[in-house]
Amino acid sequence: MVLGCVLLSGTAWSLTPQQARALAVGETEERIAALNAQLAGADEKTVALIQALSDDAVKFTDSAVIVMKDDKGHDPVTGAEVAVPATAEDVVNNNQMRSELDSALATIKLFSKDDKVRAEAVKTLQGEPDEAKLPLVEKAYAAETVPAIKEAIGHVRAAMLLGSADTARRLEASRSLGESGTPATKTLLLERQKVETDAAVKGAIAVALGRIEGRLKWGERLGVLFTGVSLGSILLLVALGLAITYGLMGVINMAHGELMMIGAYTTYVVQNLFRTWLPGWFDAYVIVAIPAAFLVSALVGAVLERGVIRFLYGRPLETLLATWGISLVLQQAVRTIFGAQNVPVENPKWLSGGIQAMSNLVLPYNRIAIIVFAVLVLAGVALLIARTRFGLFIRGVTQNRRMAACVGVDTAKIDMLAFSFGAGIAGLGGVALSQVGNVGPDLGQSYIVDSFLVVVVGGVGQLAGTVVAALGLGVLNKLLEGLSGAVLAKIMVLVAIVIFIQRKPSGLFAMKGRSAEA
Image (cartoon, rainbow, N blue to C red; front, side):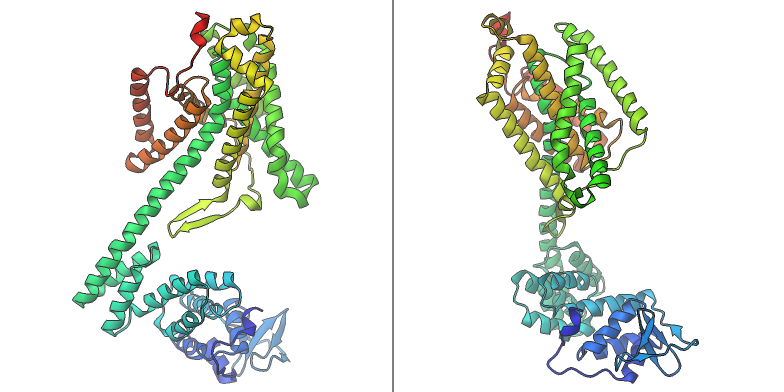
């Protein structure tokens, strides 16, 4: 055990039977007092007994305390195996005692050689500032060499001093805690402010609270910005394919959301295949799901374009109605195959958890990955459009379809390939969405309206406009949600877009050259 090798002081006291009994038997207040008294000079056996008490692995009789390990009894003082009488009773810890045991173990862990163990110990102690453990915390603070952990231990020390009877120490603690930026510290200062009688200390607490609230507000602002960029990245993935198909062919594809849904369900199928056949490689299933979702969605898009949409070019109303009907068919097909309920898609380990950027700001790995993924997809699409023969044909047909046909471009083939490509990008959006939300038959309906708004605001067929509009709408949505709620925020965004389109109907980046067909 990591802690067993660590003595908390230069002089360790050997555990005695009387001390072991005081820790395990008696009233809660008496046991807590014994725990705090023995903690300063705890040796390896004392630490082991505290851990066993925390694990509910201790029994007692009228004359002995017995530590249970592998269904066998052991003497906590000598470590020797002992018989367990039938009359032995389990040591019962109430919530208060359990909290004190956890706090004691966290204090002990402050002396671990493992940085992560010490960091976790500090987090535990932040919620339980007990002045009785102050000597050990001060010793750990003096011995700590990692700046971030030392600073955190310093805040724990200050929190313990905040309840001191010495006014000077409370004043010092209040000023020190002002450097913290955690919600727990704010709560601690607010509680102390209610009972504090010294005017100087009360003033110092007020100043500290102001500084902490300022830091927390910055965390909230950055959180809104990150969430908005994350939502914008999702909208970008959803709208990117739509921008290509709508800009190229003028097709209002109401089934675009369902193509994204197909990508999400493809991710679900790939996940299940890995879980069944390659469980050791499960964390890699997302890497395989990306090309799989693109190909499946692109194939469905090609079938739709060749089977229905190519007969409706130049008839926008009929195309809208037909693709809306197709969306209903695809939804029902998914319900028939997978069921009407949402299906579970599990994050791989490398997409679980997040980065603690600030005390009240965690950046989830899955959302960071989506932002990076959206940037990579955007870069790939931009390179394909700008640097490849296929991209040249797309740009030619988009700008002047008749002239492109006159110079030998097979516009029907380009239409099919472009529509399939846009459908494949929608499938990539489904992969991303499967990592942050529910996967169900109605998945596409939640984003189809927003994706059209992104395309229209950005400018039809303009990648740069799509990027700016997606990120702008994402951040604006989240900013307004924090001020007025989700429903009113959506209404306000729609009103703002209507006003914008009235003033600039071509969007942020107007299409150039298409009027040559007139």
